[in-house]
Image 1 (spheres, helix red, strand yellow):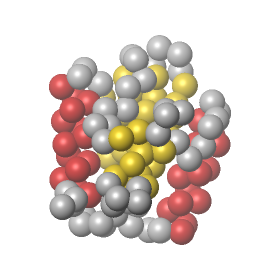
Image 2: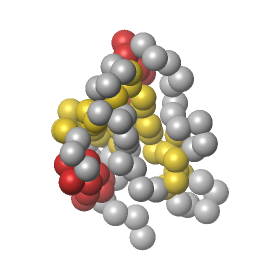
Image 3: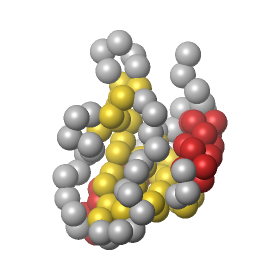
Image 4: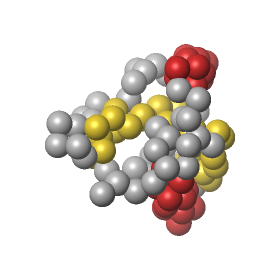
Length: 111
């Protein structure tokens, strides 16, 4: 059984805080089933990466990088487009010296 989105986001933020990073909810979505987008910002090299959830054939949560760009404006534009498609989306931003995303589920290889 999958966790509700609000509980999953709370756990992600807690893991980031325990790891010494700063994490915040930029946009709240549907508490039960809202899709989550994680923006991981590496403060040491000033680069960001996006991660969005998808579901594999087995129904398990899988995380992918939907945009391969070093330009933060392109990442933000992707987020805005997704919000236009689905107003129930959550957006979480994490700032970390190592650029960690703190996602514990499977993350696609290019991440």
